[in-house]
Length: 229
Image (cartoon, rainbow, N blue to C red; front, top):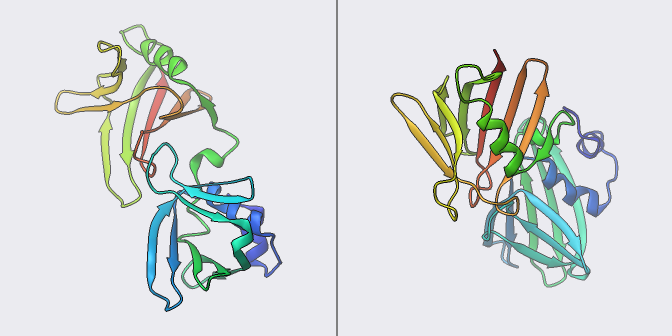
């Protein structure tokens, strides 16, 4: 996948501040570091969401109440970017008017794009996901789940091949869970409304791929692959 802003930086072109910051929305994660006047790190958090509002720049973690950093637009004196091909890392440096520096560091910049940035995926909701999963249960179901994989940014991966049951557990009205199980393993993840979780779907011929972004785990992803019988 190519990103026009990343390619512009790679080619040495000048890029506007807002376009640089918006790169955060295209990548799985970015390290945000704030240094004081003595170059000591006073803030360091991973982020994966950026937005601008009322003269403010906000960097945060999707579907999480933690990890937010806000800077006034007027506090930023200058912004520059540098892509180091030998490290495949993109550096964005912001000089603040009080002497502090804000760094945004994107690792694996040529490959670390969010899956959902692809036009082949579209956002869906919990009700549609529940209905789809209900229709995968039973011997005469049109689709069956062939693979479930839970991953996070630190490389942890849990894989369940051909789980027997994949559905939304609604027994507790206030605590719905995505339930995935086979004979040896049960994985349950709380799911609520779309403000807390994110759900994406890709229809590709005889295959449907569902992505679930769990609440308070902004860098984790559950990928479920369903195949037509």
